[in-house]
Image (cartoon, rainbow, N blue to C red; front, side, top):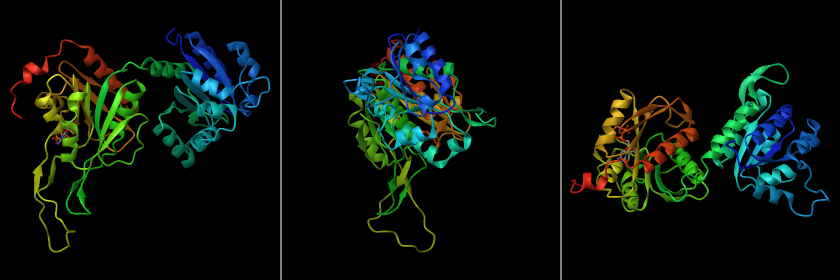
Length: 410
Ligand code: CTP
């Protein structure tokens, strides 16, 4: 009964998988949730609202204009639900949600949702793989919605492909595990570095790297969802700011260093997901460099922000997390960094996966263990990292830093 006390709005789009929503509603209720149902007009062509009224004991909402309802049903439902689960989410529904339409009861409820929003797509594979759908799904995800599936399997017309809706049990599992995390970081202050740094060569050129900042921003989004107060010290990225985060924009490693060093001791957790340039040009040339023969570039080391926080922290942050990108000896190299940089946790990435993509394959290395994780979305990995952070926050057996580091050279 792990959804006990949770209030879930199930929203149906008009797709053949709508019949599975009946089972989904039952399963969510079996796990203890209170469920209300909203349907698009198209959805009512696939399953009857009466079925849901019978299951939930409340009429399924199908009409924004119902005369027997005095209030604003979409505002009430959006406020009521701890989550809105759209299943099936059709191509059309996803497109309308992305563009912010609110011209039926389901879309208007979605627009008013205060809780977590889940889309469970179901459509023919060509509709799913259509560039419009793919780009819409990216936008919804960036706005904080969770997209569950679809999976590869038999489709309505007998073809096999990617587009099949997840089974009701799997949807309920995902919703349950997502909601279980709600607010478990309430009151925790988290500082995250994210993105690349740009090391200026002249007024128009810089040395950079392929980091997109998605990993750091995913951690920020998940930490916010779990109730944390989040500040992102962000290198140059093309990502929307997660709602509720404070962002401190920087360009170079030295600016990032300054931004972190001036505030790290006000945070419980510091997570260094940025791909900081280890070197910068010795000097930034004032005018644009003109082409000539061959040229040599002289570089100097940048400060190591993670190591500096590790060396200088007294009480805060209680948990310091670094990343490591390795091509070999993943665990050993990560353990070396854990010790050298005074971190509590290193997220060690295979260099072959992760940089620039949507998924990541990591091993979590702390003082006592190394946990290899399967390849997963950056959002899922963010939650795994935050789960570990939470354990470390609660673990009193950690060596007190102020003893170990007192008098350490700067
Ligand atoms: N880091 C940092 N400041 C730097 C360089 C790195 O804070 N100047 C942080 C990164 O944010 C990351 C971790 O340190 O959390 C990565 O450590 P690094 O030693 O750079 O490891 P790799 O990137 O894996 O590179 P290498 O092993 O080549 O040193």
